[in-house]
Amino acid sequence: MKIRLMLIGSMVLLALSATAQEKKKGIAAEGGDPDDRASARVLYWDQDANTAAGQFAIDYGRPVWKPVYEDRAQFDKMTDGKVWRMGSNFWTTLVTDVPLEISGKRVAPGIYYLGLKRSADGANWSLAFIDPVAVRKARIDAFDIRKVAVRFDAPMTEAKSETKADKLTITLSYPKEDIKNVTLRVAWGTLVLTAPVKVSL
Image 1: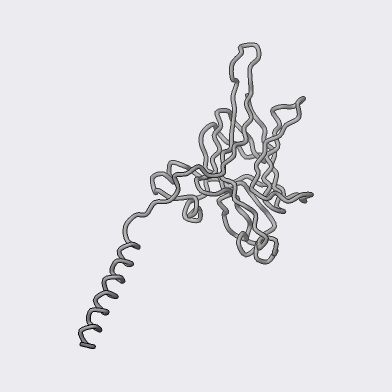
Image 2 (image 1 turned 135 degrees about the horizontal axis):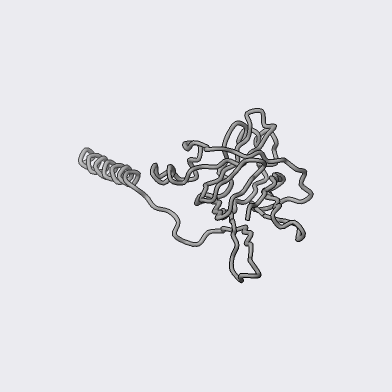
């Protein structure tokens, strides 16, 4: 009787084990519900013709800053010599229908996936531009940004933060008297990065 019970128990364990292994195979899905995304956009309006003269926008997910990132050694370990996805969930995307110059780098009209690149010594940050066509062909998620090639990058300047941004916040600001000179600002926790953007209309 004991042997029979042991055999039945073994068979049940094997069946459960096989079921558990089956669950790990194949393709799984996640998401589908709205997530926390934001958009920073600058629109230029031709008041004489009463029509748009051009625009550009950055759409991005808003990851939450965690207290562990305030440990400088930990933060450096996460970012030094790496490209960070600069957002959460779907790719951070720049769409522009006007030529831009970001920190002196020319950006032609089009669609770009963005990341943040940090030098190995941690001294320099730059905005990383990635070809979305290549990403789509390879079906790469932003989580695996390290698997994609950076086409080019534009330097960003690190600034001191007076306040802490609890979630990633990207803004595009400009003086009213000089609307073609825009400042791109990325704030996340205690990290603040900026880059000048010159717009051609």
